[in-house]
Length: 387
Image 1 (cartoon, one colour):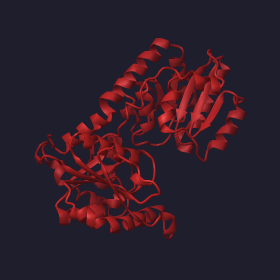
Image 2 (cartoon, rainbow, N blue to C red):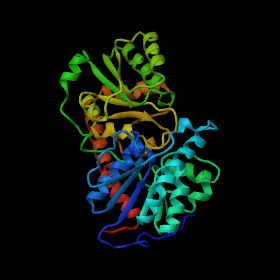
Image 3 (cartoon, helix red, strand yellow):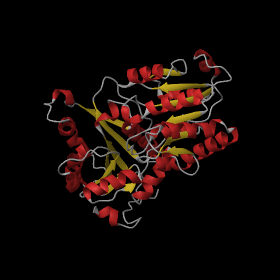
């Protein structure tokens, strides 16, 4: 077990004017997603709290600007140029090529903490820490295990997971139980808004129609086909519903075909990819958000974003989702059950007061547990830091 996990809170306190942290993750500057958002938003929040924050990322055509944060980018070999000996081999080599360029700076700048988000960066971070005296933090958000994983995570000073569910996965594989540091949500961006009637009108949604929405990648494990089946069941019972599907992916064509087979093509609107900054506008006139995942999501960031907008959610009892949709903040059903999903949607559609109460509790849940200020406070508490 990592030594830091055995410490009592407060054992590792270093009271300085400014703690110095490197958020080391190649894709923070080259891509967009949950891990990238985590690094940017945690860095931004820590900087506001007086930390010196440096983000390490890969060279890209355009580098994001992060208020209060210094960004350093380095060249790397893209994974599709690496011999295909498996996706994890390619990812490891890609990140190693990045690390070879970043290693010197990462070491000579002598950080208090090096925070990594992918296990492929463990070797570089630990070697840098050996020479610089930095503490290494690994924040797991998945199960990209490989030979040597267990050995390396035991060498870190702090091991985090984004949910208790993911922590149990890591523990089962490695024998080490991570501490839980959840993902966060920008509760200033994702917040309740007055209904955006212009978008509703553009989508040809009448005042009498109820709006159900899903926002996710259109891949099989997101379970959107079960939502389409559930909506079809409710429409057959007489409900007037428009189902908005925000997102794109390999399963879109199959889902469009499924809507045709159920004869609800006019009721299911495939919106394509919607910018994150625009999603709250769509949530503003939605009655319910549905996330029918069938696989073990480690957290469920899209679910938390909908909740932050005050929208009651219906989701499934898989992975880390029940840790997000807790305390009356939504309804959960077993996965792969369109009928029970439809029943849960109907419960909320038929009770306006319940929808409002659930939406309010959802917003409170995210603000109190998953806002970036809350996440940053949890981070500081877990490493035993006091400002």
